[in-house]
Image (cartoon, rainbow, N blue to C red; front, side):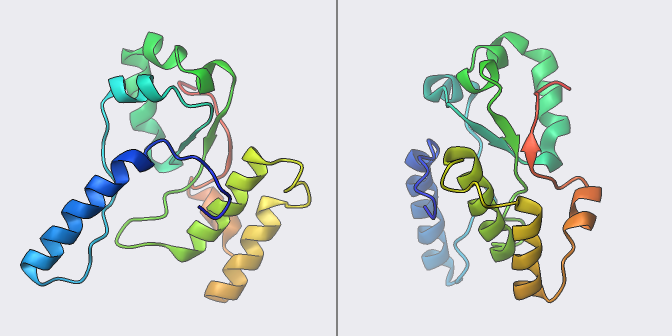
Length: 155
C-alpha cells in the first residue's frame, strides 16, 4: 500500500483476515494476524504476476518445487522476464515494522525505478534500522540469508 503496488494476493487477504478476526472475537484474543497463507499453483498461474517477490528464507522450498515443476514456473511472466526478487518476510511472531519499511522502499525501487533512483537499499535499510532499533545490522541480515535482490528460481 505504501508504494501503490497491486498485490494479486490481496483478493484472498480479506477472507483470511475476516476468519482471523472471527476467531479472535470468539476466543477473546486480541491478535488477529496471520503468518501468511498458501495458494494453489493453479491460482498463481491464473494471476500470472508481472513481478514476484519471494522470501529468501524459503528459497530451498521454492527451488525444490521448481525441480518438480519446471514447466509451471517457466510459464509465469515474471520468471520469463527475469522479474523475480527476494525480499525478507515481515511477519513471523508478529509484524516486523522495520522490515515492512525496508520492503516498501525495495518494492518502490523495483516498481518505480525512476522515482526511487536515489534510493540505495543498503543505505536506506541501515538508516531505518538505526532509527527503529538503534543499530544497523543489514550486513548481518544478508550474511544470515535475508537479502534483497534479483534471483533466478532453481539456482
